[in-house]
Structures are given as structure tokens and as C-alpha cells.
Length: 108
Image 1 (cartoon, rainbow, N blue to C red):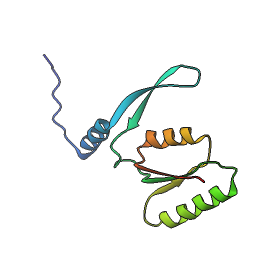
Image 2 (cartoon, rainbow, N blue to C red; image 1 turned 120 degrees about the vertical axis):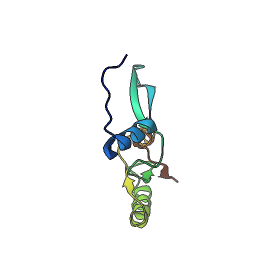
Image 3 (spheres, rainbow, N blue to C red; image 1 turned 30 degrees about the horizontal axis):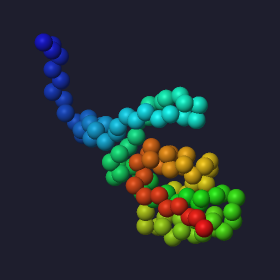
Image 4 (cartoon, rainbow, N blue to C red; image 1 turned 60 degrees about the vertical axis):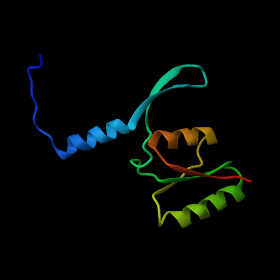
């Protein structure tokens, strides 16, 4: 039998409840085979970044120049992020973790 009744319902509690319902836990194995649990945004609408621009290789000037050009065009219309750090799979994983709905990969 519960003995505490909390009748306070505010906007902050409803907002946190909605955000919490949009997060799921996912177990991911790293390169060494160790499992880690991550909370990942799956709603696609609650993340602040809407489009990620990702050149396939960071050391190829033609790819990075084109990616930066696309980023400059899109940043006035959408909340965008340009990322060229790490391997492409890790960049996708980072964007997935923050709930980015669209990733644009610039390749050959």
C-alpha cells in the first residue's frame, strides 16, 4: 500500500515523461567484445540536430569541400552538424545516439 501521494503535475514533469518514453536502452558490443548499455533517442523529432553532413573520408579534399558546401547550404534551413572525426560507422553511431533523423554521406 503506497503511503505517499504526490498530486503535483507540472510542465517539467510531463516534458521529462515524454522525453523518457522516447529513449530506449540498447546493448552494444565494442571492438573488444565488451557490452555496454546506451540510452538512444528513437523518436527522430526530439533531437536538436536534424541533418548530419558526413564526408566518407576526412583526408580527401574533394569530399570535405563538397560536404562543407552542402553544410553551408543546409544550415540556414535546418539544424545541421558537420562531422569528419573518426570512422564513418562511429559517426553514424554518434548521430543515432542523439536522435538525428537524417545523415548525408558525401562519397565518390
